[in-house]
Image (tube, protein in one colour):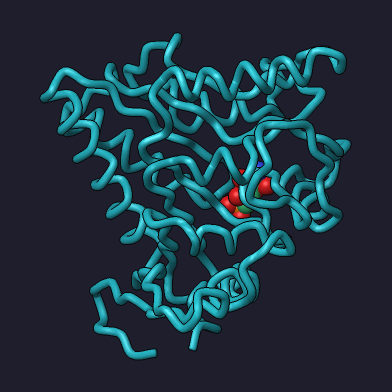
Amino acid sequence: MSQPSGEAATVPSRDPESRGAWRVPVTVYPSATEASAEVAREIADLIRLRASRGEHVVLGLATGSSPLGVYRELIRWHQQAGLSFRCVVTFNLDEYWPMPADSPLSYHQFMRRNLFEHLDLDPSNIHLPDGAVAREEIEVSCQAYERAIREAGGIDYQILGIGRSGHIGFNEPGSDRTTRTRLVELALLSREDLKRDLGGGEEVPRLAITMGVGTILEARQVVLLAFGRGKAAILERAVLGRIGPALPASFLRDHPGGRFVVDQAAASLLR
Ligand code: GLP
């Protein structure tokens, strides 16, 4: 794959299930920093456009290390360029269950530390799945989450990471394109990664509430971020392998607004 240094390169990918059609879903940047700055700039442009029309914008947000560069840039847009987030509504992909919102391990706290507390978001516009809900109320709570997304007008711009299992949100292998927000079990590989992220000392959550693949695919734009050599193998399968529930991230290739934004290390196995 040739690529001009210092510029993003786009890799055409052949979709084996679309009768020979060629898709162009992958943009390769020299580094995660440049990729993240570009994604943040797109989001900032969208916010400015909607704000200028007096409209709101709905962002779908992810946890993990992959979106952190985008979040840092968005904070910079707010603090240094005066970009206001008052017109922004957010929905996060997932939360562990059971997990109180004030636990330092919760995604509620992850998002507060890494993004929300640095912006001027209206707290009533911030949404995450409720990890503290009683088991018998999970289904109703998940339906309410789906309804809240619909009532906000749907997600305009969804950010995703990809797990080593190929998951998006916590839609592990086996999750098909019709799945909605629900309680799921984490794959072994995801729990291993989690153990590493938590420093090994904590008990690793086994269950989570996640938006479904179907929920994610209803977003108007979906951008999957993958950075580093550790993501190369799973990215290669997601971009060039068979589209299907064995690798939920592959469904992005069936989405007209789906894109993979990656660095050179993650793209190293794409030929
Ligand atoms: C967790 C999140 C996913 C995320 C994944 C990858 O499992 N629930 O949404 O994509 O981690 O994490 P990282 O970006 O740190 O590789």
